[in-house]
Amino acid sequence: MSLVDSHHELPLYFPAGDDTLFGIVTRSLTPTPHGAILLTGGGATAPSTNRNRVSVHLARRLAAHGCSVLRFDYHGIGESGGVLTGAPKVDEPYLIDLAGAASCIREHGAERISLIGSCFGARTALAGGPTLSDVAAVALISPPLRDVPLKEETGTRFGLSMGLGEALRRGLRLRTLRGWLEPGRRRTYLRFLSTKLGRAKQRIARTATAPDAWVSEGFLEPIRRLVEMEVPVLFVYGTKDWHYEDFRLAMSGRLGEVLTDARRVQVTVLEGEVHGLSSVAVQHRVMDLTVDWLTEQVLTDVEAEALA
Image 1 (spheres, rainbow, N blue to C red):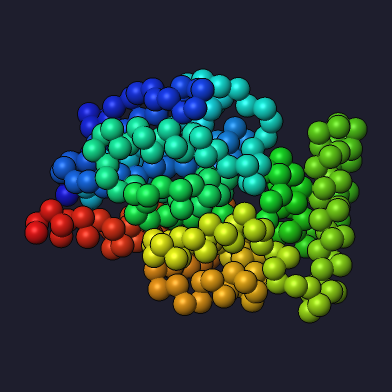
Image 2 (cartoon, rainbow, N blue to C red):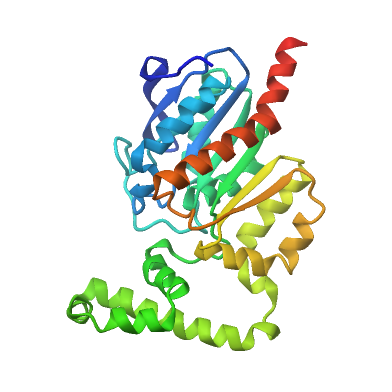
C-alpha cells in the first residue's frame, strides 16, 4: 500500500456558522466518493486525544484506503476563529462546527461521510450523524452516556476508578493536603469525595436503580435514529473507562432494547483505559480497530462500486 504523507495534505479554512475554522484535508490516493471527519475529544480541555499525532496517523491510514479525511480545530481553538464560552458540555455538541466540516469535505469530492469521534467528539458525531443525509458510518470512541459537564470529569474519574484504600493513602500525602489550599484543586477533591459517596450509595441501591438513569435521552435518541437508518455504528470502550460502567448498566434498559437487534452496530471492549487515547499502545489498538471496521463496513463497498 502506498504511503500517504504531508504531500497529500491541504491546509485550509472553511466557514461554520459565523466562524471560520481551520482544518487539514488528507486526500485519498485513489479517487472515491468516500470522506471522513475526525472529531477530537474535550474541546479545549483534552489535548491528549491528539498526543503522538494520532489524528494525523489515522487520517493518513484512512487516506491510503481510499478515504479523504478532514481533521480540524473546533471554534475558539488553535487556528480557528470564534470564542469559547466555557468548557464543552456533552449535551451541547458542536453541531455547527460539524455542519461546516461536512460541507468542506463534500467540496473535496466526498459523497458519503463517516464520522469518527472520541469522548466529546463522539457525542458530537452521535448527535450530528442522523442530521447528515450522506452519513456512511459513525465510530464512537469512549462516548459519555450521561450529560455530565466535562470540567467535572477529573474528580469524578478519580472517584470512579480509585479504591477506598488508595484514596486514603493519597489523601494523606503532604502535596494533597496542601492542595486543599488551592481553589482549583479543592474543587477537584470535593468532586472526588462526592463521587465516592455517591457511588457507595449507588452500590447499595443498584438493584433498585432504573437502568435508564445511566443514559441520557441525548444519547439514546440519535442512536435510535442511526439504527433505524441502518448506519453502521462502532462503540469502543476500555474496561477501565469511567463511561463503560454506565454503558454496561444502561444495556439492561432502553439502550439494550435499541442495540440488541441492531445488526450494523458493533461494540468492542478493550482491556485497560481507552478514554483519552493517552498511550501509544491504546492509540495503535484503536486505530487498527477503526480502520479495519471502516474498511469492512464502508470502504469495501466503495471499492466494489468503483469496479462495477
